Length: 413
Image (tube, rainbow, N blue to C red; front, side, top):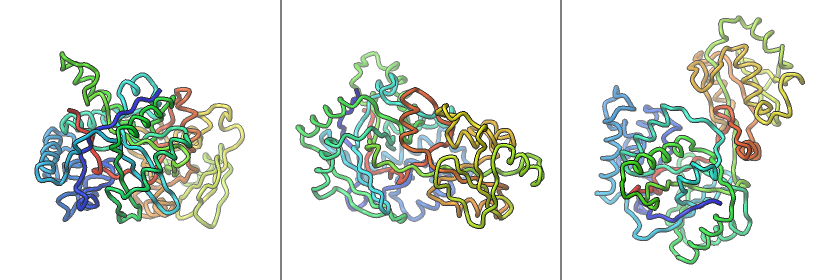
């Protein structure tokens, strides 16, 4: 049974919300963050990517970076850029991107649910990224960016949340990427109690995006628990910031791959090896796979459609039959030598929001040698695997639209 609780959000003044809101910390590098925050003293990137306010050669995982994030959060609070609500509330966050609309409930989830498996995971975390988030959250004394969760749609619950959106929103703006963002609060104790009970009847929540933030929140709780001889289990550090969306509103885009070289092979030898496990068909236009088990490959200015041969993967294995696994097990690892995509620096992952045009650009630039386009993993695949405690290969899903950071923050005390 899923436990959720309301909280006193720290959030921007209404007139500053659009300027404060920023993309998540992990969809950009430092140079991109500097450019995005340029000329904007209240961009949330000063908190989520605080290295942008420090010398360019600084180690982004060094203590001064985490201290700067803490100081910038304190500055935003002192100057009134961010203010904390006086009572505990839930919030409703709606995003629209083209014909996509997703409406989620902003809550605090429980670390206990994460540790016991009521909150299901589908990816492994990287130790360095997890450690970075632990230090960041602990230094800020806050969950500054929400985890992105989903659940199997409950029509009655969705109807209740939708009613909230009939009122005037706290914020309503459209960002440069064309995505609209609106936020409402729920302060009525009866409605808060009703929503809490409704989620208590939901058996499972699923991590969609934010495995490192979830794991880090869990570790921060344990650190603080161990340091607090009067720990009760009700302290704010026992909970972490989450936005929960129904599964039928989730949009997953492909997570494409590009590789720097052909692993010492010439083009002819490489193509012959690819043909051992795939039918290779030259095509005139970029390949945007329209179904499972269809792949595109861009090499030497030309596109090819790849179809895996029947004996190349076990159809009855839910992990091995995923498209990301088929590509990894039959081409990336044996042919290109990318045996661990989580750590190999020769491979790069390109979110589907950038389209196949980005694959062409990076290969044509000479920075990468070959690119692969995939069909997106489905939300049904994600939940089915999580239900049986299976782990997806890295970079299996790219969710859109991305949650904007800075619109709500959860303080840990």
